[in-house]
Image (cartoon, rainbow, N blue to C red; front, side, top):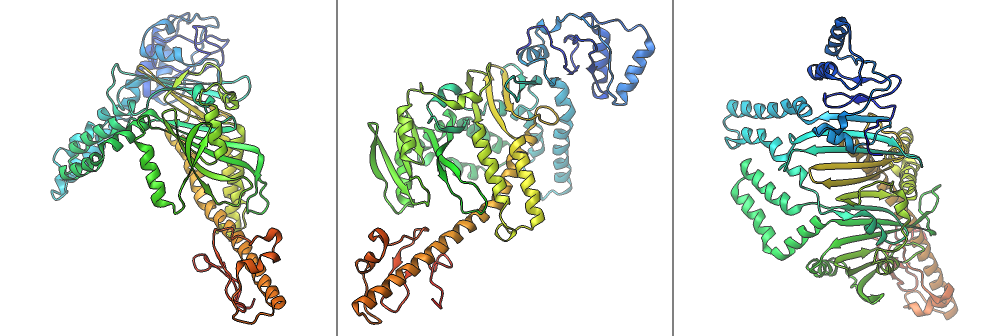
Length: 581
């Protein structure tokens, strides 16, 4: 729904550029405030796009007075005013042509004006340092520290936006599409405008993932540029050269590995989550419904295979059990079974697939990656994308309703634990539960970022209206931050509940083993102190198999008259028979 010169009705536009047109409807308004008093008045006086002339000077006086008092001023416009201003090539007109019209949100901003409204802060902070350094000569700061802080906006690029805009429109299938556009100065050198990784085709990336993929995060980071510019800034801020030399030395000790890591970050890493509703995972939390099987896929660029050998070395050093080679669809892979009390087998699986390290949580997911390596398979997750999105992106977070429901269920379920388990009062638990559910619903957002020449675009697909228009950085960070805080509160409760279930199961296993020893001793006429072996008591168990500790402990049978023990009895409190057993 790009603007084609015919603006739809129902739009409110903050007028900050006289080159832009009026908005036709039976009664449309252009809003201004005292902050842009001069520009708003000149805009009203300079409009000639079909607007009725203002005949009475008192109206202009009233307008100026109202603007000065920060009241919104509404100027009635002609019902059939033609649209011509968007054909101009001013920065704000260029941004306007990229936005969607006819929705509940539309806003244009002049970059110089916006920067002027916050630039004073970047003058005030260096001034504080200057005053402090003058008052206390013992401050261990370089003489040019304050001056370097003044250059920080130029270094980052905060003052290099010519114009920006935001728009929101409702989608026919439900939900909303919001855009935020920033038009930069030609060849803007600011660091923040060049930290993105390489672009990729979003549809192709999704099609290469397993068809059960419910969420995907693709993000890249220009690590080489960040390192170079970071060292430059550190020098200007007076960081000691010996410290910088030590940091550079650490990174250059293994130059090949460092370059491989930075190259992988610049190419972009993909993290995906799959949900298999055919397999249900029970959770050790009372009242929680089983969850669909959750799988994880991680793709790390490694075209020259510098990272994979080092990664396998780290696995071998940190994991006591060795990884086993396995062939998957003609591809050599390494796998390590993960002992978890789940209905489906979990196995960390690693392979080099089409120039990337592929890491999956099961062999089945690796098999799916190998089958779909051409990128031509069906991808239900693509249904979450709205038509008209950019073909190439530099970052994306896409998730379906099943994954968002899973996150909501886990979040709310965590708060449903008893106060004794969660360590929180009942009232606080109820309040947190409401917060978690609200956050999971409101922040049901898919995000796509695009870099196109001097334009930077962020697209949001969201199910609920976002208060205050397009979310700023604080709003976007607040939701995940609160979710993370809640997870930090809830996960220990989950862990305690799981540990309690494992401890009780282990104690029950020890009781069965002890009973089997007693039965064998009675039938064989054994006395206290006689040795018993595993083969002696296996017939007393179903399928002739000794029970296994769910936490991974090893059982020691002990002699007749002594209780069996678990190797985790000391490490994990409670993995032992009670004293009076």
